[in-house]
Length: 361
Image 1: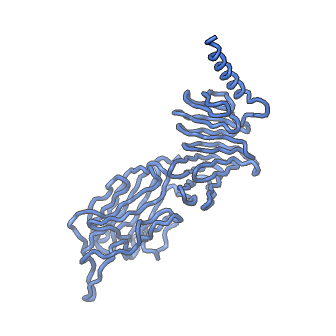
Image 2 (image 1 turned 90 degrees about the vertical axis):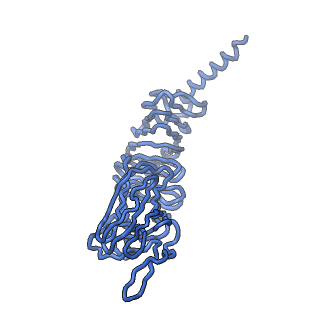
Image 3 (image 1 turned 60 degrees about the vertical axis):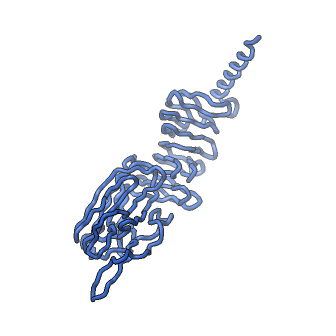
């Protein structure tokens, strides 16, 4: 008699598995498991079950990939590859709806009717797809979208972006989606100079979520005591908090600059970026006069440490950095070097910042 509860529990589990596998009346499969790891799970009507290739996925089922990738194929041939540690719920909602709780997926989407798109919902944005090949990753910093073929519409309440093949879209938390070039180039320059095509311009403005980059704090600050130049027998103090350095622009983009930070005082520039690894290259110097000591820290790397440059001399260094909270930060100035430039300033003159993603598909 004591065995009856165990027998009943086993029978109930068997019935649940059979019902899940057959789906019962009126519950057609949305997709079929192609491959998965041994710890992949499905959370559905009948509880949390272990997955294996060939098993069906029905509307409302949540897939948990575990430590290995998980692949499913829809009836129309669309394939979804979930990255390890990814949770996604599939639903039939006038098309296919995927709620991506966290993690990433790669999708090869066959052409779909406009009335039945594939929709991917994350905490920051919605991706609408009719036919495309793409990779989408969602985490606490935002939603990153890399389109390989076709196009994907990425939108949230703050804006909408059409992401074409070869373009990376990024929807930061609480900001509108924006397109990111394969290589990000920021030209630190006076605001009246027209940038090269595809180059971002920074002339010292405070961070703005519409741009997605900028400085902490206002552009104007008090000059350091004694810093300035004398001409026509008049001493002209310099405002050392983000002043544009004059230039003939003879050297092209990156030959003039923006001066920021000084001895004992630093300023922070930041840009919203998807989490990942990057190579950041910073260029400092001036074609107008000697400058420095240049002192630049990017993320946790001291890239340039109190370096002086002569007139028309430019110095650059690169470092591999990791973005883990959706922002790349550059801290300028704050050194303790006793050296000063000919105008008695001790600030850094930034000319160019180049950011290359190292984990782009």
